[in-house]
Image (cartoon, rainbow, N blue to C red; front, side, top):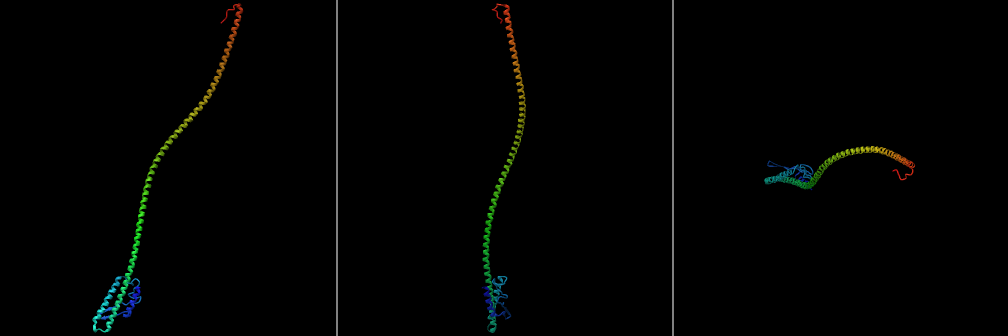
Length: 266
């Protein structure tokens, strides 16, 4: 739209003043910038032309206004002594300067519109960056909280590890004491086994000796019984012999003494 307006103004300027309009009046020279359709020094595009900055357009519009005002003043000072051609030329110069100023204003409007659009885009970008910043702050806070939880977990694990190490040390000491006690008990078991073995051997030896002793005692008892039996038999024989001897002696006495019936040998 702005390009169309610029082209329209340029066409009006070209038709009125031509491609280049020199004006000379009392050693004063006014030069109007020519404007062509789509090309030239005033080539305005969608972004207000190829001027490097808005200051150039402002300067161009200001100088064009001065030129138009100067042309009017020159026209007025020309008065009646000036020819109609001079006034016409001055009018055309003023029209060209006005067209140039209008084109500069249109370009400036394009720059302002572009800046407004850039401002809107920048504001949107700012809002997006602020939202992203808030998200980053939220993420940082969550990360910080997670780091705190991880540190707390690490502290708990460290405390548990220290407790486990202490328990392991106590367990190791208890295990060492238990191993020492087990070793001492094992030695006592070995000694007890040795004593049992020794007593067992002594018992076996004593049992063997007891068997031999019992055999000898049985033999002695048998011999004693035999001797006692022999002694009893001998005593019986002696008694029988004695009785027999006594009986024979009594019969002979009775025969030798005849009627002595009242005498008995005791």
